[in-house]
Image (cartoon, rainbow, N blue to C red):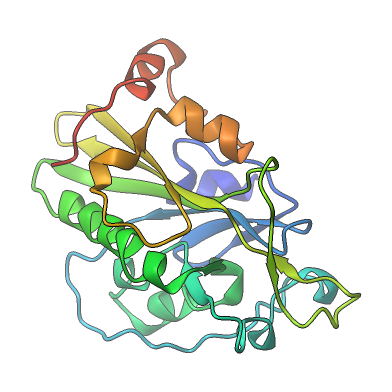
Length: 237
């Protein structure tokens, strides 16, 4: 049996990746080339918060050593270990929260971005999920690299002289299932830098996210209906 069929998170599809990591509460697609996740897919579940975040950052030893990130790669880099699956989205029990601190779930984010607009978007997703009209909220997040722009790196370079490239931007695509059975979609692309602009400024079509990130999102959905949905800029607020 395909394990994907057993994971609630993959109900509406799962993109390809070099290595798929099935965690207890989210699924992640890892890129050997970029030494970080291409995407992380979750069902948001903060409705009954009971725990503080654990902050137990650690390497993910399921990934081959030459391709994985380690704590030393972020040390004195000037970049935050930015969550793709937010810690605050998974606080129902300790193991659920702990899994979000695996470095496979991290990407180098500028502090002003990580603690600013990215955190704000994560909070808006939780606020959306807490609305009574939605049964479940699915979220996929990941990095974007613009190949016509310079790419910088963090890391010691000691592992086969390979470091971790810093993404130019990040995407987040949200798919909410309402209590009437309707599906609603919102997607965002935000540059990896501090900004004072509103979240609405960064809302884009899901088609654009797919082109920029090089992955297919929500491919299990009915094509005709969802293509219209993808090209809307429906408001979350």
